Length: 126
Image 1 (cartoon, rainbow, N blue to C red):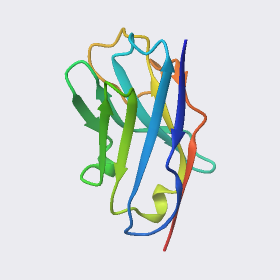
Image 2: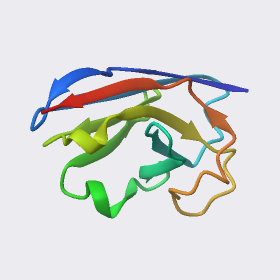
Image 3: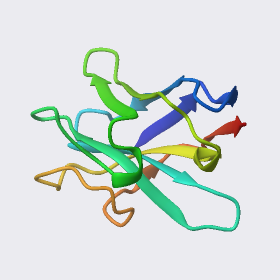
């Protein structure tokens, strides 16, 4: 089993920056793809960025390209999401997720991910 715990959320003004972290513990060796998702009030869960830890390749949702950067520290087992130029519409609960090691590329669809953190709240105000 893998346990994921997010941190780094908070309140920030529009245009500001935040860095989210996700510490993985337990059976961390088997995951290939990790991702960040967000869920805004009244909306479904949306994938914003993913990273294939095998080769470091990444993928971003169009809405965050150029503003968000996902990275992973293989030694510390920490997933990061650097968020710059934050907008009001980025206000959401942000979750990190990992899968069991079956993917051959990272994905921003929720289906393949079976390990989830509890989320960290990001609030952007103008």
